[in-house]
Each structure stands twice: as structure tokens, then as C-alpha cells.
Image (cartoon, rainbow, N blue to C red; front, top):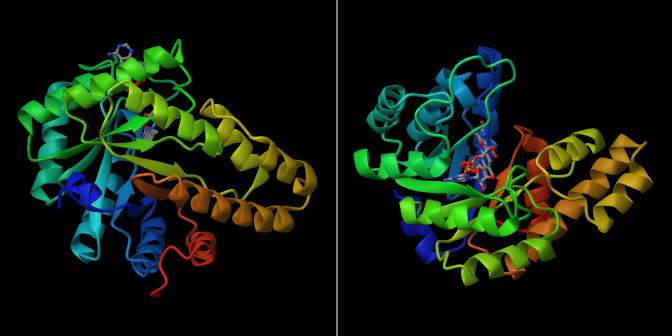
Length: 288
Ligand code: FAD
């Protein structure tokens, strides 16, 4: 099913997983997926290593989700470093497996990369290409409620985002944004700018102090006062930090749902036990 159709009808609820590197990791993920399915998600997305690193495992994971038949699947796909020929070959493979939803991204070149940037410098070019050559795909694009770290200004970033809608993106999936008020402002601004497609908000669970600081700052996102207070109070006590972080994440989910967003997309970090605690706490699905 094309996810854009689903998003027209309801607020979605979904998970993001990443492809493990080893066979044992894939087996662990298979078991975790069973726990995610129990929450009846509308879809599960799987990340793709920019430049094609671990691309085989991405296809394997997408294919497992598709074959399990418990939910829809969306693959992430990055164009950086790829030629049109490679892209066409990989997209044909997804279609042959019945995968018809794609989050079309630029990606960041991996450290030490010595090849070219490939045939597309930005995601809008990739989106336009997919729309023209592989119209079977429902295309999603990334958005950044606190601005992409490299964008020279908010207005420039929003103009580029509008370019992705014009190129053929049918919905947006956001970067993590702990600051719900900043995100509401962003949604207001992009609607004013003529971006009308639904926005699914990415929620990063707060579980580990160092990891949350690293992921937040490396993506150019802010740490609001209430999260800073948790870091200050429980930073040296990992168990208590996780407990407070889970509560914080549950509260964020409530606030985002209240704000009337298009969907909630949980970055699982492949940690199903903690994700389960968060979902049970937030009452997202009562019928489990
Ligand atoms: P773009 O839309 O191309 O934007 C990148 C920058 O260029 C922005 O500053 C933008 O303002 C600017 N820009 C855009 N269009 C133009 C233009 N036409 N001309 C000039 N400048 C322009 N990375 C992975 O490697 N694998 C993943 O699976 C993955 N999944 C992600 C999922 C989500 C929900 C998000 C938010 C990000 C994900 N990323 C992933 C990270 C992403 O690849 C990086 O953030 C990357 O730097 C930008 O990708 P993009 O598609 O947003 O790029």
C-alpha cells in the first residue's frame, strides 16, 4: 500500500529500524520485529547506509518485513555517491520484492569516502528521478524542524523543502526534535510557505545520556530546558536517567499527538524492550 493514501485517512504510527551487520544481529531483529508487530504499526522503515554501506542487509531487512506480511514497509534510500545506473538497479530490486514506499534522501558521505558525489547532489534531484522513472513508488522526504545543520538559513531550508514537494514527495518524515514548540512553529512556517503534504514526526527515545547528547547535537538539534534538567539531575545514574528519559519520551508523544501531527515515527534504535515500555506508557495501542 502507498503510505500517502493511509496518511490521508488517519494519523499514522510507525517504527524505524536499522540493518544489523551480522547474521546474529538479523536474528535478534527478527525477534524484535515480532514485538513491534504486536503494536499494529502502520509501517516499519529501515535505514540505508549512505554510499551503499551495508545495503545488502537493508534489502534483507525490508524483505523480511514484507514477507512477514504484518505491516507495510518503507525503505530509506540515499543517493550520495551513486550513479543513476546504480540507483536504477537498486530501486528495481526493491520493486521486485514488492517494496513500494521509499524515503528518498541525499545522505552524508561516509568518513574516508574518496569517490565522487554521484549523479545527484541533493534529495530533490533523486525524488524527481524516482517520480519520472519509477512512478510505482510512493516517495517520502526528510524534513528538519530545527533546520538542516548545513542550511545557510531557515528560509533557504524551507525553500528547498518545498522543492522536494514539487519534485514529487508525498509526505515528510522529520528529524528528531525534542522541542515540541519549535516543531509546531516549523509546521506553521512550512504551511505558510505552501508545503501541504503530511508530516510524520520522528521521536528519538531518551534512554542513555551520552547517546542522546551525541545524536541531538550531531544533527544540529537543541536540548530544551526540561531535557537538560534530566541530564543534570540523573546524568551520573544511568538507570534513573533511563526511567526519567522514558517518562520524558512518553510525554513528548502525548504532546505531539495533541498538536495534531500526521504521524508518530519511533526511532527504535533496535531496542525493543525500552520501546515497548514507552508505547505501553503512552497508550498508543490499547489492544495488546
Ligand atoms: P537534502 O534535502 O538534499 O538537504 C541537504 C541540505 O542541502 C540542506 O541543508 C538543504 O537545505 C540543502 N538543499 C536541499 N536541496 C538543495 C538544492 N536543490 N540546492 C542546494 N541546496 C539544497 N542518512 C542515511 O545515510 N541513511 C538513512 O537511512 C537516513 N535516514 C534518515 C531519516 C530521516 C527521517 C532523516 C531526517 C534523516 C535521515 N538520514 C539518513 C540523514 C540524511 O541523509 C542527512 O540529514 C543528509 O545530510 C540530508 O539528507 P536530505 O535528504 O534531507 O538532503
